[in-house]
Length: 234
Image (cartoon, rainbow, N blue to C red; front, side, top):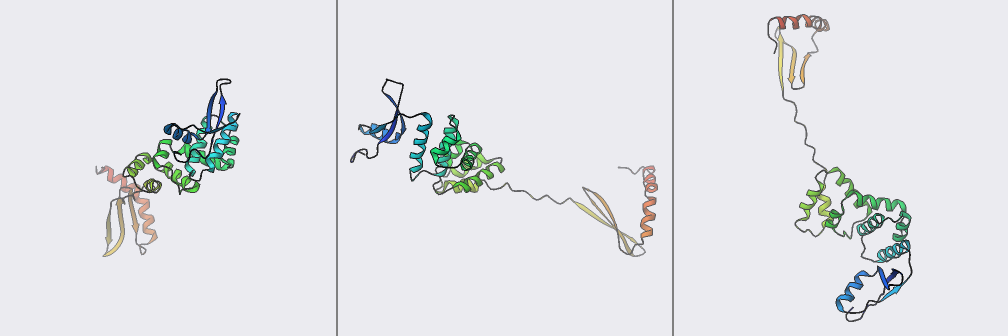
């Protein structure tokens, strides 16, 4: 700009009738650069409503080749927070209502501070960011994990943050401790007793007559009463 001047003008709209004050619709970075260089800021003056201004601003941002998906999401979130209707925001971003809903879902799921920490993510699109949201919801310690992953200033910041949000590891349950005891009769294995934290299980061998099993089942209350009478409880 110092050498060639301001090539592309900005856009401003008059505010405060009769005071010659203007609001920058787009071109704020050009205005800052011109101010620092001591150069005049060139801009088109146009009467615009709030809705028209947001549409112009969105179109200008969308036409920037370097505007990433998440930056569009943040822009949409900012405009909805300012009270603009979704149809106006859709027009400003040249997108559909369904896509806008997904964009706002990202900015309402993941805190703005985290999105800014991850950065522009120039090669990351809608699907990948939606997957990021799913991982964020599934990981209760998401914020800390991302801060830790990005503390080392990795080149691929989105990939580092995405990898940090891996699904929580589900530790396999330890098998209940068990003890196995064999019951023999007449030199043959009659049954086995398996004892564990979940309870005890008595299993008879195949060759044990069913009648004996029924007989034992009928005697079980009597045996239990005798056991209590002998003072062996506990």
